[in-house]
Length: 140
Ligand SMILES: [Zn+2]
Image (cartoon, rainbow, N blue to C red; front, side, top):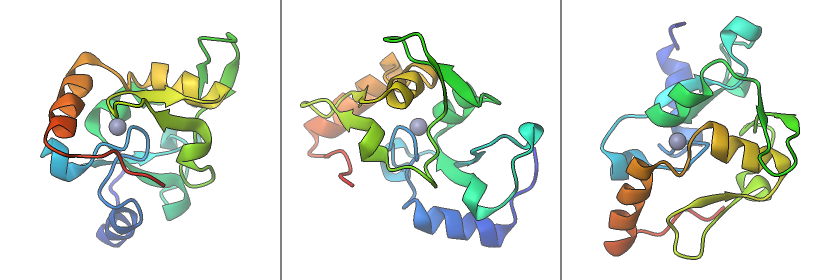
């Protein structure tokens, strides 16, 4: 794993407001520092630059691994992964009405929700507690 220069990490943390760029979990809620994710993995030629580094929670980062594509469960289409530096979250995802589940709106969104297990039982249980204590999912 490449070392992220502190200056780049600071820049990314500020831009991403200490939240996961994929499932929007915040550091404050999870109590766990975000990791830096290479949007295009270094192993696939991605750069160690602001345009290619974003904040991701440990779960998203782990499941994203070195993937660059994922399969939409609805159309069975293999699509490039969501790029938080080039694409807008709300174009591809939305929150369920109860604020507990992330829903994919597009082939990319649906493929990402599945590949990164954005509604895994642990995070769904955590979001239920956050919602019960007055948390609202971030709105872009
Ligand atoms: Zn996440």
